[in-house]
Length: 356
Image (cartoon, rainbow, N blue to C red; front, side, top):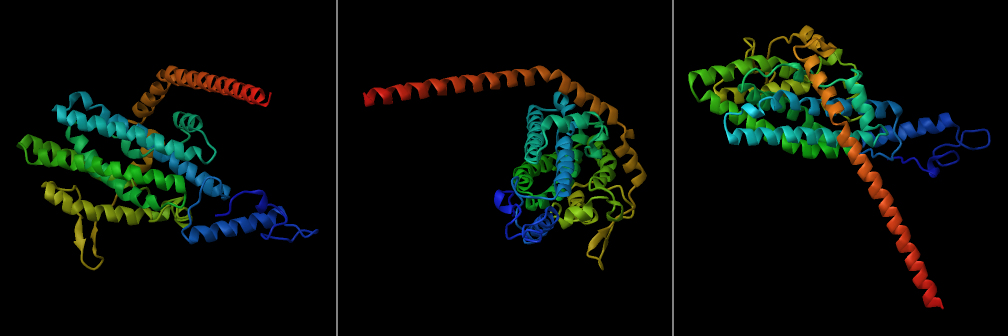
């Protein structure tokens, strides 16, 4: 990639079209952009100190912030069931999963900070409603089976969407996704295993599992975003190699994976139009209610106010922890500097004594 260094300034080989033989800002900007596009097309990774178009940076901040927000908001629907898990084993699994989601949010906020933004700024925008999170988390978890449906369907959709991000053109995002995807595979598997246990249990347990799948199937398909012809960012993100596949391609891939898994679970996906298309080599599926999608995205879902209200409250109640951590870090920095100064003075004194 083209790093921003003195060597990439006016008067370098990047351009000499100015009146005195140096590159004009416009010339330099155009050549940097061309070099950037060529590097991305050649599958080179963009790193934080590399030159990048402002639009690329802004697109990454938007996507990574939304992803990070989704991870921490996504803790809420399932955390509600930790105290009501049916066994100690299930409780331990669910606690581990919710803890993972918090960690994923931290990985992603850290990656976003390499682009010049700050965690506080991103959280302020989330709390003010100026940045979004995945609409899937604005639906309620009504029964224990919902924990399984979220693991199997929601985390399964997340894996389908996120595995290609391990090859994202922006290095810090891609590296964060490698670890996140490994942990998401555990999340998906525990959800599948939970639904399998319920499906093979009593009639009431099977009915509860089926009801959860009925409610989470369509929102899971909406997770991939609007259709390609209505997506404002998808095409440009693919051109920059931030995304590798379109929304509709990923949605189709997820459906093809989920259908045989549902059969193995003994559960029915709630779509009468779902069938195999031999000619396409894919499953056909029914029309998605995009009116519902946009309505939830605008803040009118069943749990929008509850989710963001709890997030704001948690942030406010955690202020003392952040303040204490900042005070400790400042004290540690001052102490370290004082110790370093004392050691330097002592070393200088010993050197002077040796000279004498």
